[in-house]
Amino acid sequence: MQADEADNYFLELKKENKKIVRQVFIRKNVSTSQILNKLLLLICPERSRRVLRPIRAKSRIEPKEMLDNLIYFALMIYNTRQEAYYVYIILCGDGSYYTGLTDDLLRRFEEHLKGVYEDCYTAIRQPLELKYYETIPFLQDAVDREIQLKGWSKAKKQALIEGNFHKLQLLAECQNLSHTKYKSINATASVFDFAQTGQENPSTPLRATKNTMKKIGILGGGQLGRMLLQAAANYPVETFVMENDDDCPAAHLCDHFTKGNISSYDDVYHFGKGLDAITIEIESVNADALEQLEKEGVKVYPKPSALKTIKNKILQKQFYKDHQIPSSDFIITKNIAELKEQAGFLPAVHKLGEGGYDGRGVQLIKTANEMALGFDAPAVLEKMVPIAKEIALIVAVNDNGESTLYPPVDMVFDPHLNLLSYQISPAELPDKTLWRMEAIAIAVVKALQSPGIFAVELFVDKVGEVYVNETAPRVHNSGHHTIEANYSSQFDMLWRIMLGYPLGNTEHILPAAIVNVLGADGHSGPAYYEGLEEILKIPNVFVHVYGKKQTKPGRKMGHITIISKEKQELIHQVNRIKQTLKVITK
Image (spheres, rainbow, N blue to C red):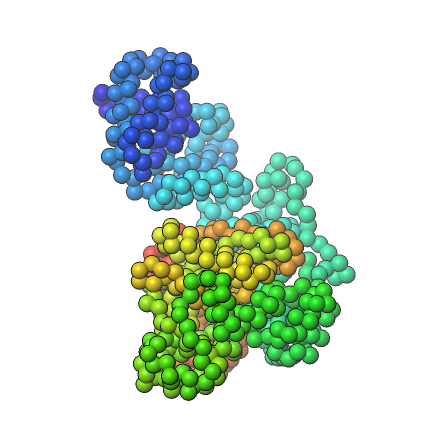
């Protein structure tokens, strides 16, 4: 059989039975016998009239020769290893878009232009230009992505083609067309498909008066509270914040600010009495007051019982053990004297029972000579794990117990400050490792029996075993990239949970990385962001400055999110940002 005859036959076969051909001809990770079995279905007697007759009439190929040809194609496909699949978008003459999937992008586009797929087009809707494509290494991922893009509106496809990811996120989140956030989108009436078809707007505008809005409070006014309030602007909610600093990052964004001590029973109780719900941005709040508020009908996210378990590192480790959740071995120490008796347990990590946060209250102890660095207070001594990767999984749980997972995040820590230096999502993990991590994260959250947002931090050791490190019962640093990189951010998701709305879509718009912006060594005082203008020139970079007026070494002053299809581009921009942007004092 000549090569041109093979090509012609292949095209005829594709035109006659596209669905089967897509399943058969695109897949390369199956055996020759599996391919042959599927191909032979095309020439079995009961299907000969429907499939073979039109092909034979056009190609004049006899049944025996057809079988030889099928075997030829099966062997050709099996012996040709595919490096990538392509999901593509073609602009048509009528301004619409055609979305497809192929393993040979150039050939597929030529086929479109030559009219091979004539049933996809009309006299007006003709292919004009290949506008966009994505390279995806695994078939199932490519198929899923094709289905996803086919379900997108014209406006979302256009935003993706333009690389306007901010607009893409707004279109994904948009429920209230009257909100000022959406006025920056060009010609709102023409952006959404329903406007083009003359259909009524299917969204219900999120409008409410303060008398009908839910009143929800946040304990703590730092950067997490600030970003929560930024997401709250999309919803009908009256917001309240309590913090002991009336110039904190969240103070000017809420509807009502109360100056108070979040660890004081009286302050927390009186703050929460008139609210419908209350949440936290830090664990060091008065859980007893929250427990009383819960008894009086105020919804608390997370539940005080879960908070009490997590905020105490000793109770948290015992919780993992009681629920058979894999975690490193540990010993409880009441003071420095008991710690010094555990030299045989080293190397280990000493964690203060309560009060630790952002690297504080954690001490690495590798030798007996370093015992004096430990804490003279109730603490937990954890056996050190030989870490290959540190992964975070964020889990969202609503009041009905329904849950959803965000894609895994690969966290890279600053070894000196013990703070997150940068992260990349989604993390590259073997499927079995990811499935195990997801199962463990779900097990942790289910055992806590609480709605809310939970960030489960896990270790993968050198031999692939998975251990839970810690859990945070709140929005978390490892989820900041979700503001731009995911359809529903962790902050948006928490409002959905507290307001009783459906859980959002946790899928990525594009892979992302974030860099923590920390106060530079040797600088304490009024903050100045050196190099910020250069960073803002980089495409697809999103700057978040937390509004802290004073800097000091290691203080979290902001973060920067980078979005890109290419992992190497993410890493390149991470390094560029770390070298360019400094928070100093003049």
